[in-house]
Length: 452
Ligand SMILES: Cc1cc2nc3c(=O)[nH]c(=O)nc-3n(C[C@H](O)[C@H](O)[C@H](O)COP(=O)(O)OP(=O)(O)OC[C@H]3O[C@@H](n4cnc5c(N)ncnc54)[C@H](O)[C@@H]3O)c2cc1C
Image (cartoon, rainbow, N blue to C red):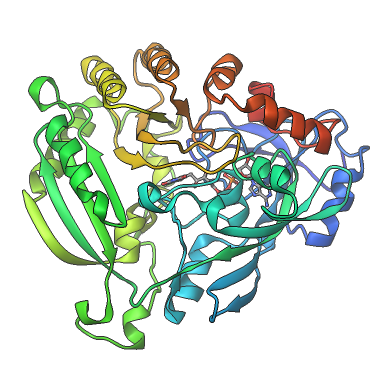
């Protein structure tokens, strides 16, 4: 181990399985090839890149090995306002990009539920947003990236020049190399406001109809009360929206494109175990459902409120207490399997604080990319929920049996055989990985757990 580094306890956003790795901060692009090719550095444990640590499980940590904190690579290198493309270093956050780009009339083509994600992390997980049913995932808008590979070379990778490496890296959870910079196509917007429709649905049938009816909107998503039982199972709220145009906002002109959000409050640094439990989550769900009007159209909301409401509370993950939260995100291709999954959760009365349902459209060619046509359900469980492990094992069986999958960016507990069963192109990805990193220089706790 290099003398200048001490081990740090780090984990994912769920804070469930912290491990001690050697975190190298302030990394510069020109140092990365040398670090990767120097096999005397952490020969047994290898290296992994880390962005803003917003994946929930263990893909951005490396027990006993080197963790390259990429966030010092934070420069927006160039922006072309004619073509709507931006060239950035890989550690730039989507938050920074939104702040820089929105006033110029351009926006990110895909944004996950938080802006506190780096460009490298967004490509490595091939993230999706509320527009997946229409626009696909992040990788579709990446035209190229610079990738430092295990042999210490920096490759220029695009879907045209190196398609296999490009798509293995898009969704490849940092295991094919370390991205140093990337070029992304943007979408034009006239304002930084959204025009939002909201519909309350009393049960799952109504909710699915409402989501289908919202399909014509660029963005749509449903929040669900996962503790509702019997005929109320699946009740929730569907929100959908579009970017507002000049004539839809009170004040047109440059101010209508301003974007400078702040986190309103921070969660306390210590919260006791059990604050979020079945009773408190049931009360929250009830209140949320009841406060939503039956239907509301054309409400103006800021981009932050619409896409990233959780960014308004700093370190909200601490509300789950010292033991953390387990996020479970699956995709299933059909309504029957979705019902089966929800039915299990509702019957078990397992409390998920935030339960989100979305339709996904066709995926990218990435062999490890998660999105595929169907329904994706995201649940946040306090890790101490009684019986959680057995419940999730049961859900895994429904997901695998249906041809669905779990999302690697959220995963902290999957077993290798489930990965193989649900990612049918895993062998193709592994073959490419063997070629580009035959000695497994790039490793993470997740890659060891999943034998990736
Ligand atoms: C509140 C919240 C909401 C979210 N909502 C969504 C959502 O709606 N849709 C969605 O798809 N995801 C969502 N996510 C997950 C998040 O978008 C992904 O986990 C994303 O990868 C996190 O990016 P990061 O920069 O924090 O990367 P990290 O979590 O630090 O790392 C994630 C992976 O990226 C790799 N990586 C990071 N930088 C590089 C690099 N430069 N080169 C190579 N590999 C790299 C790491 O090795 C690791 O495997 C959400 C997360 C949170 C906390």
